Image (cartoon, rainbow over all chains, first blue to last red):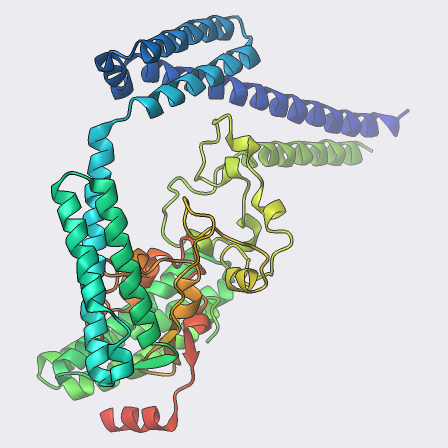
Length: 293
Length: 203
């Protein structure tokens, strides 16, 4: 008996814990479901009473649409009653059915302003796209300076698409205008793709002045520090590594100050040299923070 | 025996507290803001949480629990070492996935551009290679041009600092594409002798 007492206590603690965890999980699930349905009812209530869709339906004088709205409102009332009586699944079904009514009626009575507005935004984007890619294509054609590349883009056809799109836009036929402009965008995309096929463009590292190089070097050093800090926040880094990284960072701070002193005295060459060495040392801290390069 | 019983009570209490902490901590969301930069840098233990815990979907939404859990969806896809631990490029190459290029046209095909851009960088870090091919298999040209990158050589001021702040490449990388901690995936071209001469000259 004297050995049973602690074991029975131990077992009962485990048993109680399991029961407690289980009941918390069940209760959480019930609360989640209840709160999900509450949120749905709240949203649905706004949709059938206060949303712009309601104004649109009422202004349309479409008797069928108005009838569907009434039906949706009835379903809301029923769902609210079901919710109050803790019949959550039934309430959920009613809301889902009501949402179907509202989706169907909203599709029928379109928000013309919103649709037109999104067409206008798309038209503007497509115009920018066609323009910037046409400029890029002409530049590539000029660089390559051969007839084959030049012939990849039928400018007359491209212009006719653009002109047709502009005319349709002016007439207010926005969807059709975008359709035409999309043809122009695809045409110029394909031409540029073919003109650049298998090319490798090299962006050489060159600076207009020593001041530019100093700014670049400062930014490079800063970006290493940013990346090290970010990795230490997000990744698992051991305490020993953190201590070592801190030392490197502290030493780098001195390097940055030294570089600034050089720069202030007009000696950008040494300022860059000092920063380059400091940034190289930061590479080690970067590796210790969990990256490999 | 008194001592033993005391130990039993203590260990029982410890287990109870551990259970309680475990129970309450499992309901925690991973991120409050779905667009938090570098959320793909999350440690492996927090990778690909279910929709109710990912900080993107409404955990109280009725439909959220109906969504497929990423770990199930990703099960057969080629693995990667970071981000959401899926090699999406390989997944596409191996035809494990077949994303629709146009939401209204199931037969639309992407305009794939095979153009590499190499950017020289200073120091021990290899040069950056940007492959258009892998990007345009997923994206439309207009996703990046001209809003994020002007399609003109020298017109874009790209730095690691700007990427880390969620601009330029950082618009996607770290959020929906592999994170910036994967240096080698972009800094992939070893510097040739010419570049070394250049660097020496600069010094």
